[in-house]
Length: 42
Image (cartoon, rainbow, N blue to C red; front, side, top):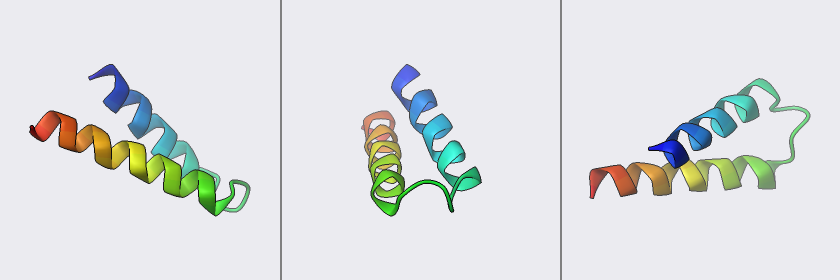
């Protein structure tokens, strides 16, 4: 659950800093968020 919270936090930060953060970092955040959702679902 902690990992999920961290992923959500990273995702939110990425959304607020879309212009400043590179696309690679945003994709990494989405990847961690997706993995966290799968971990909770299964």
